[in-house]
Image (tube, rainbow, N blue to C red; front, top):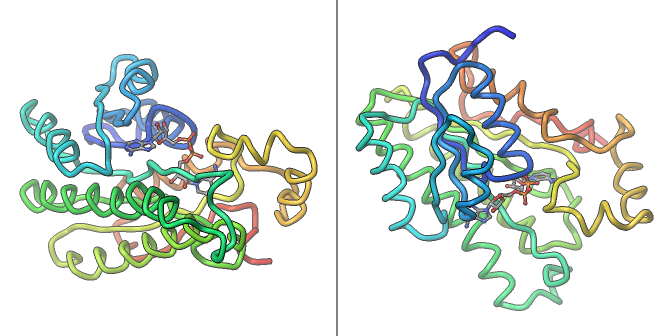
Length: 248
Ligand SMILES: NC(=O)c1ccc[n+]([C@@H]2O[C@H](COP(=O)([O-])OP(=O)(O)OC[C@H]3O[C@@H](n4cnc5c(N)ncnc54)[C@H](O)[C@@H]3O)[C@@H](O)[C@H]2O)c1
């Protein structure tokens, strides 16, 4: 494999498992120095190998600031930040009339506020460091009616798509690019409620034109592209690597 990210420093949130871990591992394989940031510090450490594990709760601004400060203390500035951590509260999130305020607030605290805090401090670090690439993990639920049964989750994903556009437009002349990657249904621990139920699983696969669930590795190629200079003319864009789900 060619090392397309040699010399780059990347911070990936939610790198302890699932999609974030696959991205972080691929970035390591491509030669980057990678910070595996996760609320679950032991997962981040286990995943990291020779890379840098970092316990960071994206819903807590002090924790996010401390994470970037720890990186700066090592003399490093992030060239790439993947704001990927997220939650989906199965069993609580529901059609809008059935969502409690608590579920709404808990979902927003991580997926929308947490992504905002990750991006806010990434921009500050990148302004000081001369630019960079921010990549946010979006969702089909933020683009289509796919998330009708998950009003809180879908709303956060619509929000992060807008946050990416606002970020991209505000900092384009500062050498900071921001883009969204939309995975399809991907079998990680996040969606074990669906993957563990044959009927739900068959239903979502039937809404996926390529006819199979995604794997975390399915989105790593687009992530490497966006983390590298190959994507130097792409900003404010949505890259859908979703098995065709959002084109149905
Ligand atoms: N799995 C899917 O089908 C799918 C589809 C589209 C988008 N996504 C998005 O992909 C992203 C990654 O999801 P995944 O499927 O890999 O899930 P996952 O549960 O396997 O991984 C999520 C990671 O985020 C971490 N995390 C949760 N809250 C955090 C916080 N407050 N601070 C720091 N880390 C935190 C968790 O500890 C976990 O390691 C999420 O944004 C999710 O919404 C997933």
